[in-house]
Image 1 (spheres, one colour):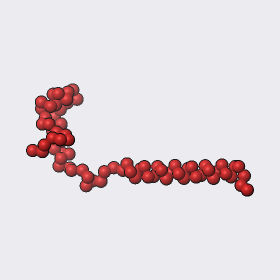
Image 2: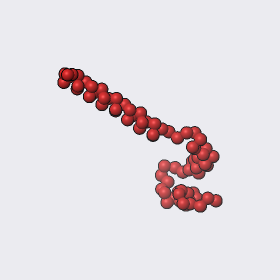
Image 3: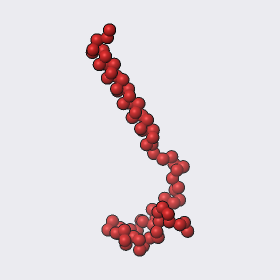
Image 4: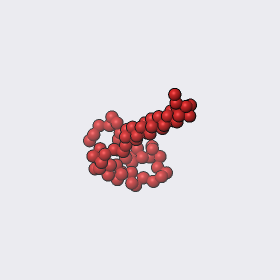
Length: 76
């Protein structure tokens, strides 16, 4: 029969192995997007639109200067 110290060591090793395995699975599920997932032309156009705005521009002011965008906005 194993000693209590041996059982505790086995339990600890199993816990560490489980912790490492869960971290690996979580790291794979939160990986960065592939380069093919990013539309570079749309990104460049969006960056160009906001380049002239300064840090003190409010969202209301930006609405006057920029076209509407976002989910549900029809493409033109």
